[in-house]
Length: 409
Length: 145
Image (cartoon, rainbow over all chains, first blue to last red; front, side, top):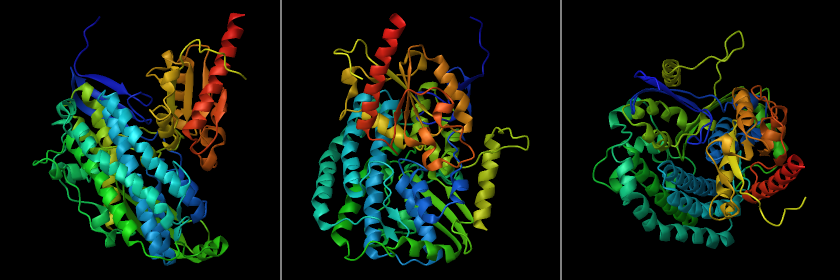
């Protein structure tokens, strides 16, 4: 075999068993050590925003559910909030609580899903199966409340489609108790395990300063010690009435390293936080309707007349999710719809945290920010000849910076 | 279609995401997990299309994934069965009018088993795999005779 010169290139993806979604990574390697990282997203681009600008807002809600099958309710919720803001729809108080409960159950299932995937990437399949078995309980409750296991379709402009009635409380409470009973075990299995500590401690470190500079969001940012959470920073739905704190790695260990281990800590403890939030919601839920306008034709007519622009954000399981909507009062479809999913902000951290790591650590580090390419792949760059252009990291970064400037106005 | 009384071999599955929303993908993994446990029948996900008997494709086949899906299909050894999981691979589903779709899947590669649903339940996916087993056994018989 001829000797390979260092550095050599290692391509991974777009179809690779370690990646759950199509994305293409190119690593410049020196021996076992990653020197440079580049990645090309865009494989899951379906033109959702373009389609949305040709549909009415109620149809878009169903499209929102399918931006991402794991955090669909976050997208539907944030879009509904933006449209309600434009059209001035008064959402009944009870609907806010129903929305919060669904959003928190989604967070539980998403974090457990992630915990399982992370264990799988470490080669710890027993834990993967355990996490997914536990996750089934939250999926069952979501099905009990909304009727669907994935793509819940419960959000509606001006409220929710279904109510959570008091006779449903015992089943929800049963699920909460199930998770409370398992929490100690989860902490023990994920955080006191020697293998996981060995593989995850000091792996893929993102310092607090770099986390801020790269504009990371959600659990990735919190694991680096940044106290930011849209639920407390700018409360939406019922979060303003509830009592909870931002989860930082300090809840478990004394120091904040910003490594993969800290990301596990944050997500595991957020499951517990979600249980508390749901319980508070069940206790405080006011009576009343859950939908502002039950007649769809009337709702659609009102939305058609609405004009203006709005910008809404929520804390999806992966971090901040923002939608921008502009309606002109002449057509049913929004004139402009922009989706900024959480992975869009977090993916630039890959370049930072993969540098200097070993090949074997690549899967778990990639998984550690909980990437969701189907959320992120919003833009396809096609040049005038109709060929797709390769997105370089500088180009993406420039786009990202420009976008931030634009949003700052 | 009836299953033969004993499985003459275990079924290995390779999963390709052709730009789906993840809904079907998590249901496929959920179907492989302890609650449904199809591994007792020898059904499991493998890391390479060259080892696989069944190709599970989710998603509406975006333009960038068309060649990749084809290439994965070509890498599989015959006899092989292709399963299309989710409505968007069958008709485009909610993404029907998108400019970036090269699907439905059956215009890219031949499909044997369709599992409709957005997203299909794990039970539906397992039922689809059972249909795939029956088809594979029939194909094998044809090859032998």
